[in-house]
Amino acid sequence: MAKILVAGSLNMDLRFSMKRMPLEGETVLADGLLYNPGGKGANQAAAAAKLGGDVAMLGAVGRDGFGDVLAKSLADCGCDVSALRRVTAPTGTACIYVDEQGRNSIVVIAGANAYCDTEYLKECENALEQCDILMLQLEIPYDAVWYLAKKAHALGKTVILNPAPAPDEIPESVLKCVDWLTPNETELSRLTGMPCEEPSEIGEAAAKLQTMGVRNVLVTVGSRGAYLCTAEGAELIPTEKVKAVDTTAAGDCFNGAFAVALSEGQAPEDAVRFANKAASLSVTREGAQASLPSREEIAG
Ligand code: ATP
Ligand code: RIB
Picture 1 (cartoon, rainbow, N blue to C red):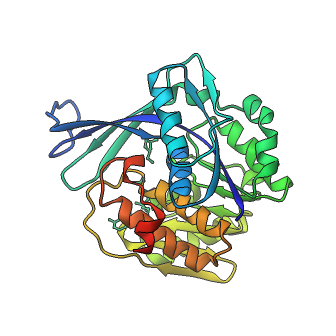
Picture 2: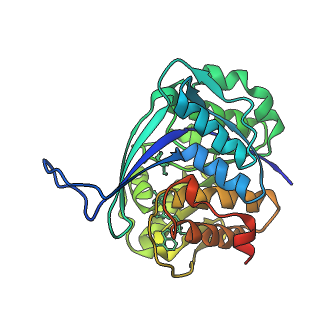
Picture 3: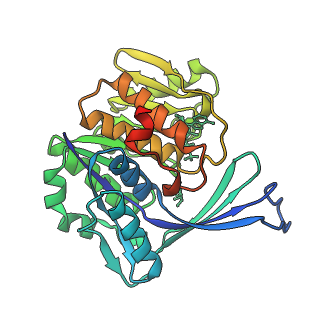
């Protein structure tokens, strides 16, 4: 099985559940508060490890209680956390509002994640050399992400970049190093400046990124599944209908599962089906890492 390396954020999620989101200037009373391990990088690493992947994580947490909990949560999923950096800054924290329909709004303070920087990643070159698949997102400094994507590509690794939270742009020199770009519709639209509501629009926007150097684009479209856009064309791979309770980390679960399937040598179409299945299970449960399914659940 190929080895997966995830470089990215770790956050403690403070999840407030409420009937409806507050309007600007309004106070609403929440009906629940949960502390959950999260962060896009850690969620993707945890998802992949829980599904049986051989996974290591690079990232930074503070020397505080949240940092301990986040490192332990990942280790408990079977992820190698031996190279995590501990710094004198508060561990990254996210405030997540979830309404009755399971929709969310998230505010993140990077904190220690700002120290998952190029200098630290250069010290972790061994981990990069040992992996086959590198998975990245955008909750750590952009420079660090661009550096690692280029380095990994030069070493012949498979690079998966989940462009979330949505950036205004990704340099073309980085896009050329990406084997799998995995935006949702909003991120795809932001990156290309094109509308991405209709299937044809998604195909056109993905094609634009492909002409800029991305090898494949995998666009997640929530309850509809995901568009697989490769050199052979674009196809929608639908997912099962489920009752969504909380979509937090659905995209992370999808990415982690997709990486595992690739690491096992599955064909891209099958890898997307596997990722859809995993993510559809995750949305039926509350929280980020708390919602991630095990391999047995996918098989069942
Ligand atoms: P988030 O930011 O909430 O983590 P995202 O916007 O990055 O998610 P989505 O496109 O909403 O990503 O969802 C990712 C994947 O999760 C989808 O491609 C699909 O496989 C699954 N998924 C999301 N929502 C649902 C749903 N309501 N029912 C079934 N599957 C879903
Ligand atoms: O993608 C979900 C994640 O985004 C949450 O766990 C939160 O920490 C934010 O980073």
